[in-house]
Amino acid sequence: MHVGWGCGDALGPWGAGSHVSASTWVEPVVAGSQLASAFYDTALLLVVKNYYNQTNSTAPSHLMQDAQQKAVSNFYIIYNLVLGLSPLVSAYGLSKLGDKVHRKIPICLPLLGYLGSKSLLLLLILLDWPIEVMYGAAAFNGLTGGFTTFWAGIMALGSLGSSESRRSLRLIIIELVYGLAGFLGSMASGYLFVGFSDRYREGTVLVSCSIACYAFCLLYSIFVLIVPKSAPSCTAKAKGVEEVGGQVPACTGAAESAQPSENSSKAPVTPSKFIIILLFAAAILYDLAVVGAMNVLPLFLLREPLSWNAVQIGYGNAAGYAIFITSFLGVFVFSKYLRDITMIIIGVVSFTVGVLIMVFVRWTFLFYIARAVMLFALIPLPTIRSMLSKHVEGSSYGKVFVLLQLSLVITGVVTSTVFNKIYQSTLNWYSSFCFILSFLAGCLSLLPLR
Image (cartoon, rainbow, N blue to C red):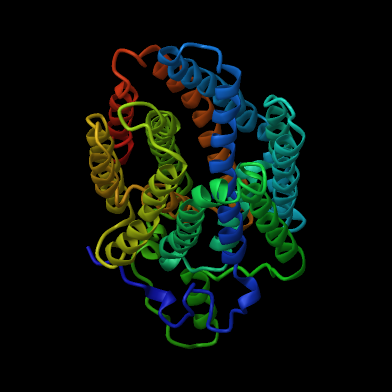
């Protein structure tokens, strides 16, 4: 089925009008923060690895790798628990403030938290603090909103400035910018980590670059970024034209399907609630599959038979971020001919087949084949957000998106803990076992989409 652009045809590239100022673009914040995050994630993994290498330096060499893997895994279990659960205290309140007071609040406050928490990693490197300091950094990051609040705020701004017919494309463009920045950051991070180790402590330059990027994002958000005006829906446009006796514009695709007929206008709420529940269920199950696989993947890459170094890890992360490009291209093409629900199914199938191949990875080339098969794996979540936005009022975007994000965070925290423990238990038996579980969860996520 062809999904037309409808009322977005006469609009600018985001469907909000050609007069949209560049200062309403949220992309610089997305790019800068993800570049910073890519630097930080690589630095933290390698700092933690080096810390436990020194701690276990007296152990026999054949036991050192297993001890290091378990220590790093245990660190990330606690770190991810703190990072994931601490936003529960503040995320919903900050998003409601964003809906009612100012849209910048759920963006600026988490950026401030990022800045402070990443600074603690730099102090840890310079002052030889114990690695447990990072639990406090994760708590500070989460209490200021964390990624949960930040991404919900970004999605709310992206949805506000776009028409219903172009919203899927608008949100996947934001994801594309996110992915490109992560790709560049991952490519550079390994070299930045080891490249200046002869003059500075390992990780100092990388973490400093991360802090500088977050500082830029915070300043841009406060002084430059302008909240876009909400793009009117096709229904509102048609009503306005009728009042002045003009011709009603055509509305097709998702916007048309979201508009109830006259016969069903008496009870449009119940089906919308049912659709929202199904979309939440699909998103949670899919996130469980993705988080489960991606949380143990860095540990899997550090261990034999691959035993990757810092540069190879950077390349591996870059391969993951390349999926943002292929997913964007997928939405760009598919959205012209397919429904949103069909695009989501294509993305889920792409991931599940890719993670099934990951079960058999024993050589580097097979890892990249698995990543290549996952080329559409990032289509589902932004498309689900787009579908959700078509069933709620614009004034509730922040609240709905943060509820979804909180659901994903709770799922991620539980999944991360369980999968890390399973990985530890199957380490010497079959280290790819977690990928089998992730494949099964991915298959289950297709059930609510039927």
